[in-house]
Image (cartoon, rainbow, N blue to C red; front, top):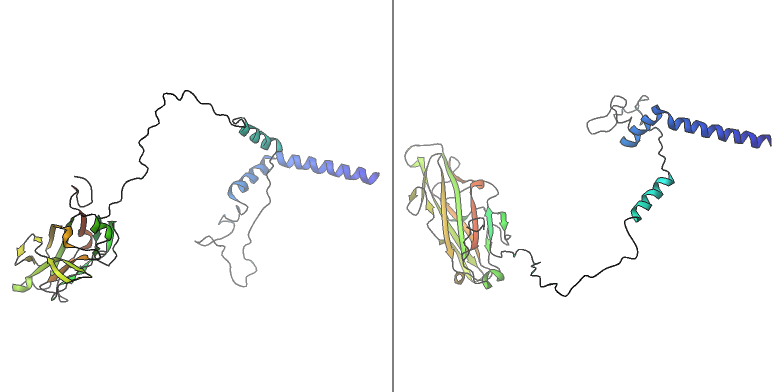
Length: 296
């Protein structure tokens, strides 16, 4: 009997101590910090435990005084009453089973004209630009880098516009708008060395066509010269082309690209295409749109 009485007294004392701890504002304040910031709240303080820039604890090999991770106990009491109150509140807004009520449908017009298909995809539009600045080669006509897709159709062939079945079967003619920004660098500004002549073309090739590197000739230059553009030392100029390619001029699998040729290209005398000021836009020629395929 004496043993049972002692256990009862110990239990009462433990409960009293527990209630006293729960009401102690200092303990409550400490617990709130851990509940809010995690169990390693104190260890995260670099004044208590030194850490590196990555947040890891700084440790020294074979050292006895390395800092320890500090985790202090904390507790949270959730009353059954509060849980039941939340559940009860939730079901106060609903009644089961659900009922429906129909009100006068005789004069309701349900002839709705809804278009759920979304905007139609333009199968022709594409806008490309170079991904980096490149020198213009001399000698033979060579394709230029214009590999970065800004909008529209992907490139099935690098640096080329590819004619798909859908493009051909649409019957649409294609409008090409090209702007090429270029400059000339030379270490010699005397005589013929002080200038360079640049030529740009639109090329065409296909499964049943030979590669015609000058299919469309004569871009519009700020300083035209002999079918190309003449540019002086350290000048920057633009070349433009706005042309319509008839649907009868291409077949499925054909490709179009842009080629260029420079009068000079050596380590000290060369012309460069500036990527950010250069683009090639392809649109449906029957549409009144700009180079971004926006209605005008």
